[in-house]
Length: 372
Ligand SMILES: NC(=O)c1ccc[n+]([C@@H]2O[C@H](COP(=O)([O-])OP(=O)(O)OC[C@H]3O[C@@H](n4cnc5c(N)ncnc54)[C@H](O)[C@@H]3O)[C@@H](O)[C@H]2O)c1
Image 1 (tube, rainbow, N blue to C red):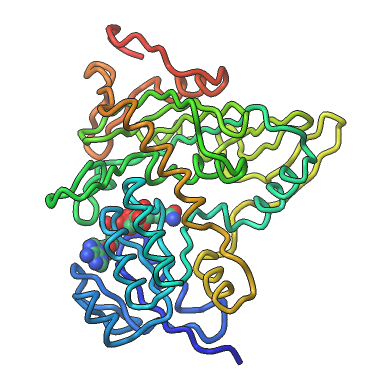
Image 2 (cartoon, rainbow, N blue to C red):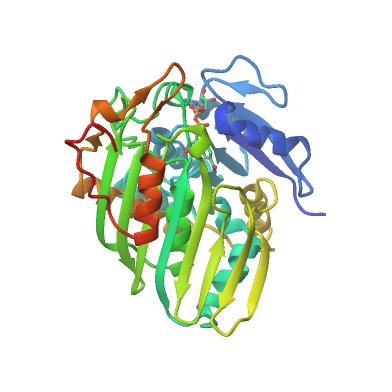
């Protein structure tokens, strides 16, 4: 029987609740949650709860640390966990800046331990099979990859947790740079770069905000990667009725790979070859919390790391390059913005972003008009 892997969790609220859920019915043998740290929680039903990470790591000597805390804490906590000899499962994005992500990679290498990052689709068997076909040249050269995600987020989202959402820095000056593209929709920029296996270059972008945040809730990006054109439009400033779940088309020389349903959800990942052949890769979502089980498999030598720190760095670098190009997002004109009790949104924005997606173009909206 394989050696027991003692696991600790950094953060138990917010998204971390999924890790607690996963530990109720572990999908691998001999993996146990032995402790958690969260200075803002009172109790944890599954394991002893610590207020201090150093004490927890010293007392429990865990094999794996799962870090599911706000972005500004990732670097310090990952460095600490590696220094205590843990393998690290880290929530996305890897870190707030390229420099702090590199510090995590250096800490991993000093410790000689493993690190993986939770970009779900990197763990998806369907997505990986499609990537393998792309890399084997079945589709020909990549030409143009585009994605659209319109996910409404209300005021509660921006006020959750310790109030770090949409901020550039915390009160100690630690970088956060939380934004629509560095958090909820980071997966879809990551997926394009993961599939191409290359950094985004020649970036052009337009970032906007309707919500009273320091970063942006709407972004449009064009770039080149691996010789292909890439395009992405994302927004949280969208009304619930205009929501668009992730949708993409990756156009290659000989095929178009498509996912998503206009106006709907889910769908299957399929490659449509110009020859008329269709290859169905199936449902995209991986098994529940597969990133955690991938770490267990990797430690036991049964699999490789499926989303490395280096892969995740592609997303962090692109978002940082956008920040250099446009340090301040453009506020939408006040006359465009609908401020309701629970939600701030921009009428017409969903339609306008769909038009950008169709044309693969950056917006050239006339901000002097009274509405979009
Ligand atoms: N993979 C995904 O799809 C997904 C989805 C949502 C969030 N996330 C990521 O998860 C991370 C957390 O986001 P969230 O939305 O859950 O944030 P959150 O603020 O809602 O929750 C963070 C949790 O960390 C705890 N915490 C705060 N400071 C801490 C500290 N010093 N030590 C230990 N715990 C501490 C908080 O009390 C809270 O329980 C972020 O990196 C985010 O990008 C990933």
